[in-house]
Length: 203
Length: 236
Figure 1 (cartoon, chains in turn cyan, red):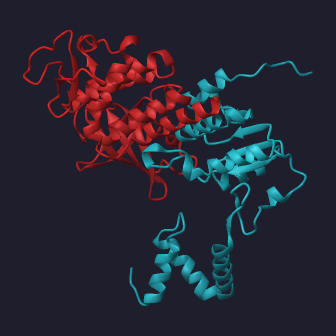
Figure 2: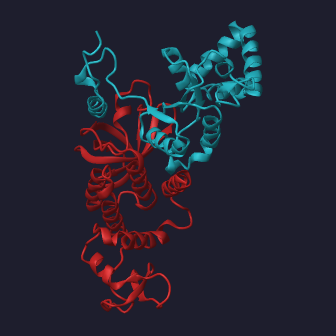
Figure 3: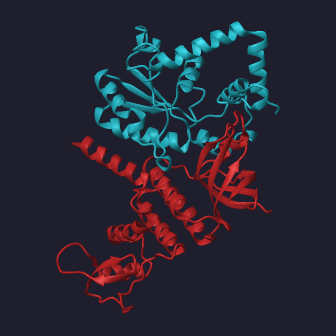
């Protein structure tokens, strides 16, 4: 690629920290901001700077927020008895968007992965234990991913909290809605089969 | 290249949509390979490329880092959960740490597959782990030889210490922990899953693995110890 300005080169290079942005996309973004929408670019720079400066973890659930507590923890209408443990803020949002859950969350920001050296200390598990202890939580929903690491994390948390007498549950394995059995992978299908539900009992 | 049976030992994200995979294959031993595009949302191979799942693979590339081409799963893997899962992670971490790349280890592959079958059952777990560890030690030319330092048979009534550098046993003083020659005799005959020998077998394989692992503790073992510690304090 021809270069004509060190500053633009730096801008292109920097834009590529974003996921999904390669050299061509970076170039399109940079020229768009410089040629068509400088005002938008300024806003972007400003808000980005402010967000990086101020956004941290909610002191209660470790969700991302610029306040001490996130809006979910602040919401008095939510059910204190159910706590859902997720690996990432993106997982939390997915559950919120799916609807149906009105309890509270705890965000681990990762999962146990011995080979990578990620241990219980990196996931705020002591904070989780203190939370379950203080808040009289009745059901802990372990919504870590259905991967090997997510499974190990769920097991570890359940063992850690067993002494507190909290009821733990795990998301079920299932066949995707509107899917066809033929195309479902074998692992999911066999687990869905084992976790089948009684049928025809309601109305 | 024909499809080759394989297991994923570990993977980590690489670039944006790819993964760097550490793989145990039947004929080529451990390989490292890039799985392109598996981290893309909706990628069908994403679900397949999981640890403990029997895979069939092809790859290309002459260098140390290969590129995976075809990834097929051969039926669902062992349904590991809880402690069985952590034992599986332990086996994977051991191979990732100790196996050199591209060294054929077909016997180890077979014992690893047998281990995965056994892990869901607590009563079969210990024996299968020990057999796996011994096969790994054999592949690395570090397995205990049930002879003394001068290559003489062990005295049936004796007590011994194991010396990993010689792969042989030395007579132990009367006091303190030591291996009973009688128990070693059973192990020499390949009796790794007899319940009475579980403690001896575990200590012996651990001592034999220690110099290979060096000073860096296995993370999965730390995790298991931590879990046991919590369970004990929780039970009080």
